[in-house]
Length: 639
Image 1: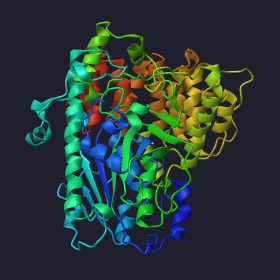
Image 2: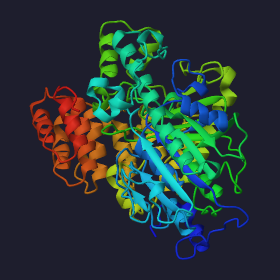
Image 3: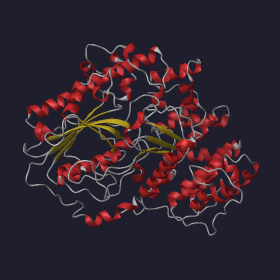
């Protein structure tokens, strides 16, 4: 067992027999079949959610026969971390699967939850997308392919769990038009197309013909997906399975368009969820209960009568193991494709709180994939042409705020950040506390630089504290995220490595006030702390730290020298730092290369040596490194 991983789960192995919890199945009635019908990249844009344009008779019919959830949320604004959460019942920030398209395997005791169903006698199929951010073990499914289906089970009396994933609403389809779809996809489209003038555009978008055309096209795709939903429901009916089958319909995260997908606002994380369970759920019912993707796996086990492993962090919201209603749902944004990021969020039934740990990274950071599609390109055009209003311009600001708070009751589109409102200070502090508690409880690994993360997850990276504690400040410095600077220094002096790393990152945001502390932290026993200290000193606005940073360039640990080199670039000392970035680009650690190329991308090709290194990045094996080099050289986005 990898000791550093998810310490909260260690007791679970004591409850297992042969790696699985013994099934507990009710003998008095037939075990229900369970079907997940999922679509991609769709906020709650269906008729049953009050959308006047959506043509979704099958989804609406499910709602009329079942239970509609008003407050269902993904754990991330993008697919792979969210799917990691769905299949394990664990937060990606615990497992190290929080970065988009990473490959960090969960520890051996963490199973894909269909394995527990199979042990209990279920036939489990997935059609077809996995994308769990880790290699899928062969034991996860009886079938996982584009032909997987409950109809393939050898014993027609065997209960089943079946997943069907429809991709026609994906970002890539919104970004195209009918002529660019496959023949099969075009056949799903209804003859009557959505009138672009009939759609209501989000407040964050300008009213342009291009955006209207693609937004209307999205509604056509939703209608096509609804037909696919109807096909699965009809197959259940044809096979006489409707009455004993629980059907979920949901999307994997919010709408696949700029300022929706990948972000932690409701428009990126709130999803439709409808559950139909004949004879058990009252038709046409609606609930405002908060549910999270982390709860889905435990809920399926509960419905199937299979005990929920204690290591799972989610709680069942239906079935015999139903847990009390949760007070908050949480979300995280970490590396998003080629872009490094750290954002955490908590939401209750009324308020959304967002904490931006990298406020220097703007909302409109260049991300190759969405930049290749017309909506983002038209947003850029409208911005450059001066066509954006005050609401739309805030997403093109040079920095993000440290904190965001939105009242979803009065501001459902999350336009007005009220984090600075004295009237809402109590709500702000409550949600701040929720984020702090969650991160501590799940042992959030997001502050471990990704080039060090695999070592930590595999049981390495044990570092002592400094011999002497860091001194507190005698003069008051700004509070950060509701804590005083000295509170953060207390965390840096603590024994919890993950909280020490968070503290080092946060203290770098007020570098001028803690320059001496960060300079000393360059020699911290933990190279992760040293990395964040070096990065933070780039904000120090003082030449006094240059010598200490330059001295760190000769350190052996990459965290120390890469952090110091990054700090030097921030202070305008590029020449002395360049050999470190060149050396990093020559390593076999793709995340070291990615961290290095991003700094060089920010410098730009005007420096001849930087231009040479950016061109070297074009030949990298990592597509993310290539994307950064491509953009750094001023080349257009690549599909």
